[in-house]
Length: 184
Image 1 (cartoon, one colour):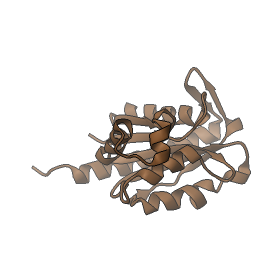
Image 2: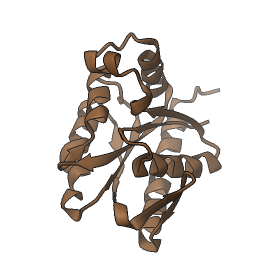
Image 3: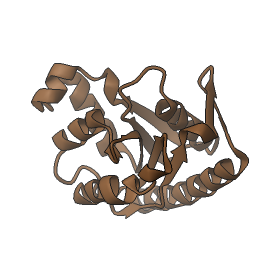
Image 4: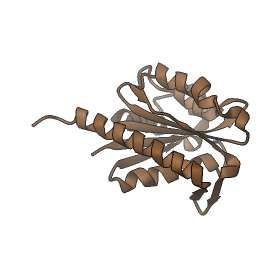
C-alpha cells in the first residue's frame, strides 16, 4: 500500500492551506493510500524553535515522514516565501529526510505576485532534503478557494489543474511504493 504524509505549514486557524491539504488527502485516501498528517502548528513550539528533534511529538512526525513513500507539503505564502513555521520544521529534519520520496508542493496566497514561491523558495529546500521527485506543484490564489466546514470549493479551472497534479503525484507515489515493496 502506498503511504503518504501531508505536512501543513500554516500558523493560522482557520487555514485555507490546511483545508487544501485535507482536500488533497481525501482524494489520495479515495485511491486507497495510507495517510498520515503533520500539522506543524500543533507541534510543541519551544521544542520546534530550539530544534529538539528528540521531543516525542517531533520525533513521531519525523518517523511518519521516514515511513512514507510520498509527502504532500502545503503552505501559505507570506512575503514571497513559505511560512516560517514550515521552515522551522524543515530545518530540523535530518539532511536526507526526503531521500527517495515523491513530493507534492502546494501553496496558497493572496496575490499572483507570489506564484513563483514554490519554484524559487520551497522546491530548492525539498531538493536539498533529498526528494527524488518533486512533482509540479500548484499555487492556489486565495480568492479561487472557498472553505466551509473543512470542505474546499475551488474555481473550476483550479480544481481541474489540482486534479491533474494530484493524479501525477499519486501515480509517481504508487510507482515508488511498488519499487520499495519486497519481491516474492
